[in-house]
Image 1 (cartoon, rainbow, N blue to C red):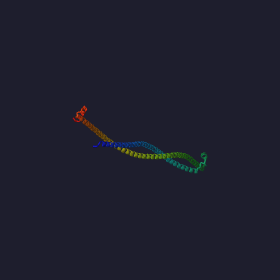
Image 2 (image 1 turned 120 degrees about the vertical axis):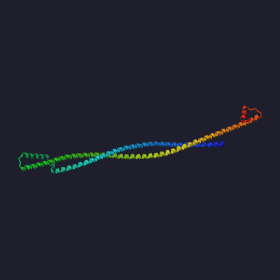
Image 3 (image 1 turned 60 degrees about the vertical axis):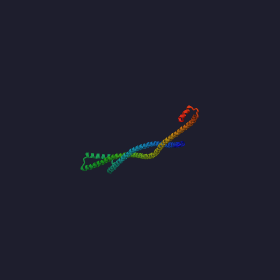
Image 4 (image 1 turned 90 degrees about the vertical axis):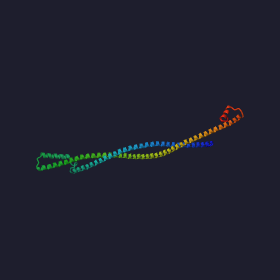
Length: 305
């Protein structure tokens, strides 16, 4: 069995060990809490980055939709341009054909050199002569030939006039198509510029999304490392607190033993004092000296009389 001094030394040693253990546990707890605080801060950053990523994705979606509409508009304008070019080609072909016909007719009768009114006057005069003058067969034939030639020239002139009218319509149609094409080309230029800007904007947003995703991955990785360290410190803290409780029980047990030892020692000292006092009283009792009632009780208690 340990002596009182050994018990006191053991208790001091346990208390020092307990104090160091509590200090160590507190350090680990503080480190764990700091790590958890950093994890919470990172969680806040993650929420911000997620919101930024969500907004960027939503914006990218809108840009894609707008780009889709602009490309559709571009396709429609190009289709309309192809149609107008086809129409313009047909009109130009028709113009060439009409000019060729006019040139053919003009080579026979030139409106600039021949007066239509004069031809009609000549024709009416011949018809009148044919109807009112007595003619021999030869003269009739000559007049009829002249009438036929005049009527033919007039038909050519009428055809030329019709061609001119048709050409005027064709020229108006060509000018109209050219004007439409000019407007379409301007719109195509505007839409192409818009599409180019949207494509660049889309590239920029896509790049931002990639950057945000990489940043989030890195932040997630860093957070997991911190959480892992925080978990390790928490486990370490739990183990240390378990040891603290065990050590406290040992200290309490040691305190109890020391107090019991001190109590036993005190009782022993008290008994020794009683014994010495009883021996002195007993000697007085043997000598026949007078003793008090309490002293008598003490002798009886110790079985000395």
